[in-house]
Image (cartoon, rainbow, N blue to C red; front, side, top):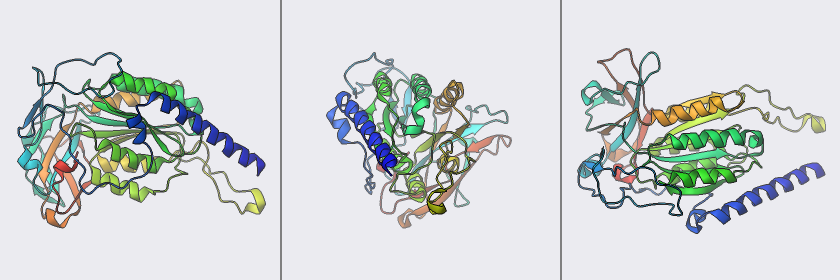
Length: 390
């Protein structure tokens, strides 16, 4: 028992040291937002960048490139300049009860992205009934609000260098206008960098990642879903990187799936480890202790379920090795975000709320594979698009 107590004490010291370093580098406002599980408000807000109007159907994006490192952690986009345009649904449509948006990924038989389709190529079905597509967008120039959630539990110690390198490359591959936040998590989630379009700030925070403690995976994903609502863009995603099983959260997997269904956020996941590792049996004290997960076991089933539920993608890496496979997975995710489509529709009988199953077909190209979230949860008596929809 003294050995266990000493280990818990050492883990607590390591976690406290990591938090202390983060306090030194974080803005006070960012630190105040970290951590605890908070239920969502009934109507989270949809954010449009400062200086842009809400009445039109397009936002003209500034053509400026990523700025060098500075202390401004959340620069405001200036007045519209000449450059690519971001289409958004008209305000009247976004305010209509039951309006929802979903991200659609289309690939060919070789796994390559099919990005030259038009609105008329798609058919959308809600609960098995075809519904008109009322908004359509190619996402090749669409900025995204992205949250990066990195496991820093004790078992990640030898994997953190490769994780830092892969995530840094992922950030470099993003659209310069994407706004990004960074969570580290072990016994609890820590917001190391609030939303910013200064990607150098996020990369700098990667250097303070330290491994210690347990894995509060479920609580962290829920907190990430809450945080990503505050992103400035209507397309939102999370990247979750972990090597373990949840052993510390107050929430369960069912709660996480329920939040994912409601929030309309793509949840990309990377699991490092063996999903079929043999648990460590409780042989002490006559076998009365329960079996424990192996240090090599990763919860691939939950990660895959979350990605599939939200129309994203799951990557399983048996080992981190030199990090090449991890860097490739991150590169694929960054690329995929620019190869998708956004489709908007109005769910029938929205006043009653509830979960609605979705299906998207491309009958003009029967050989392609279509990936989309499995369904949406329609909130009764609310206008879902201005309430933080995807």
